Image (cartoon, helix red, strand yellow):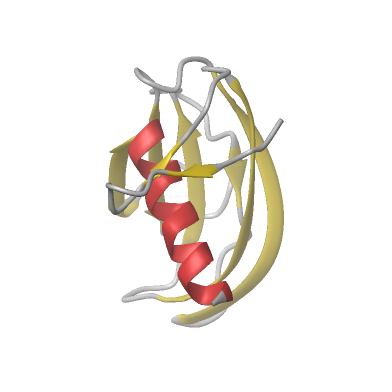
Length: 117
């Protein structure tokens, strides 16, 4: 069983079944407008599935690995948000990005494959 298969007549990857499962992500680094911590929420969850520590500068170097569970690939969502406050404090979300889970995974895999080549 292959994890991926390329579709020759399309510019993106086609993700096979199953429609649910564990997603593992490696948060490496980023350039931020303001210091904060990155939170990953899945399937419109109220609590983050994963959160980094608060960046010490606007050039964040996290190198953290986290995981979460996507219930339905076609209906799930991935929500990345940058929270200015420490964990446990009231949320102060600086910016956020929401995307359908399937689209997020396809774009991530395409970017990864382009970096490998």
